Length: 380
Image 1 (tube, rainbow, N blue to C red):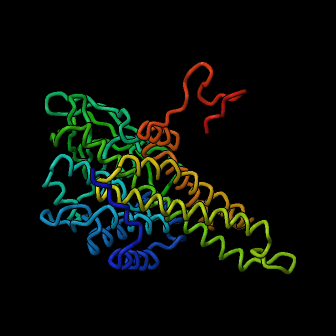
Image 2: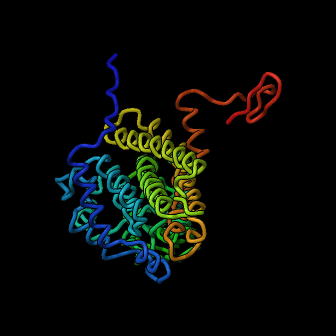
Image 3: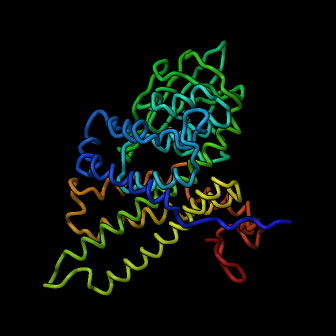
């Protein structure tokens, strides 16, 4: 029996060049003040930035084969893009359209729509709640007479979509033009990735393929590459906090020189380093198909707590200025908290990982889940 190849966690020269190009673009066109201003407007998505990323740089078609007009790249390159988008909290539908919807369309072989996505003329969004985990039950609308009836809530980036991919009760995944639906904004903690309710009242639909395998593939890719976005968030927060503490002085001393703060930053650095390895492993597993379910579950079992912890530490260590609306740390905290339940919460992925590696918690009367006492250990 041949051994599985070791995951390649180091970035190639091409991937680093891609990172540099995306970071330069975001530095010029996605400054924190501009993102804050956009979240206060009626159009939170940055259409101009999306056009540059998707069309000029061709990133919307990164996972789409060259034969269909895409770049024919892998999830490794998509992970690099998402890491940089996370660092900037960019209000664009890259994860939802260029990754999740694209994976669903690839599973269905919908070449015409994939061509539209690759050419950046269409934005597609999977019409299921952002919280739905890979392999979990998902809501289905009613299919009757060639049209769809029903609604789906908590759909991310639906307000920016041209096409919605909707699972129906007959087992099919259908393409519906957003203009034929009613999209109602919902209250969202993360204003850079707005949520909406999608209502279908006799919306004409075209069947693309089977919903269950398409959603399983799409949501798994979404969960796996979300870790790279969370890595970008955490890395920016750590870097910015270190920079601030080097500049800030208290009692005529550099705040960053206090031993207690050094310890907190060192612990956070270790957590971010661990997240970098887990996120990279998930991206490589998605690209190669080796132990994909395990790698994705590991990444998402760890990523949320690191991103949220980094945001909480940044907020506290910035002191009074961190609590102001003008400082961007609140954007990162809200994105980190929203990401912590996107494509499945941490507990969901830990439970999935336990099943995958056959390390389930004891469930006998003397070893109840989470119980502690003589002869038992609490399940963590």
